[in-house]
Image (cartoon, rainbow, N blue to C red; front, side, top):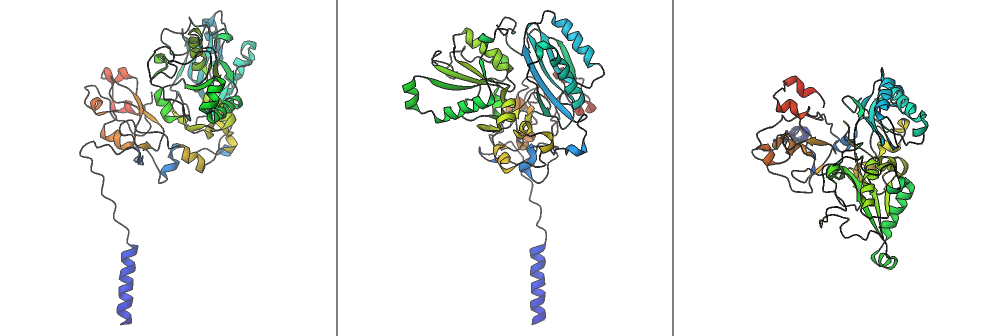
Length: 430
């Protein structure tokens, strides 16, 4: 009897400890979007993901002791409006200084100033910024730096004269950018935070009594808002800055439509500040009197104040695409190997463009349809089902690029248009 009981117990333990069979793969016969509100833990095809899906939005950071300060890669951004009598000669001078230095990025100069975003080893990147600031005309310029953990964030260097420092319909040379009184009044990050807190506490009765209102305006694109934004701000209905029409369209969806131009404080923000400076001159010419901008943009705010009032990550126009708020605030020596619980919670803001589910990685991809090329966020499921397209209509389009794995990005569109694509070309980054 004791032997039989022992054998039964052994049999039971064997069954309990036996590895469970792998779950059956999800049937993918046809595209069937998941209900909105369901978090997507499906990685993009070929993406190297670990078992801890929550920590995927932030890459593993290199401990400072393992990398020399002069060789770690960084991204540097700065801009300044000032009159340049001979901008083409300035371009030649900048190109001469950068000879032999490992700098990639976009650096544009014209009669109204300079706009620069570039990456490189810290030694070279800092040397260029220091060289620019040694010129007394640029000595008070705000220079912002953030880590580029995967190396260069730009494919090549573009340093040239450009008629418009930002992409704007009709250019910007006709705008009064050199007149500080025509641009929005800059608010330091601390003052901006105070305004946000005052806005949160402002009720209808006090607003009506004072006769003043406060409006928060996101002067970016819709896909940037999807990755992160200040709480309570309306999502922009544009996919490129040149199409921005706040205060000009007269449409019901325009947040400035019907606004009292004399009694409304308009707080504008963008990534680094330059788009707000440019667009505020347009609004000023339209009669808007109380214009304020976040000095240095969201990147400067996150460095000074942290994510107070901010939800999600920050979209950036380089190979990194999306950065957690902690990227800007902590010095290199304090970068953590894993995100905090608060940072994890703040990540759940992005949604898949196709099915509406929440996505783990706040990163975008371009639609595989060459004639669409929409920049959008997608869960791994929809990326596969729609073959890298943003919708079923694009999937049926005649000119399609291949679905790229992981974080690879497409080459220039003419490569696919002209039929020049080879299997090896898909490994390159645009």
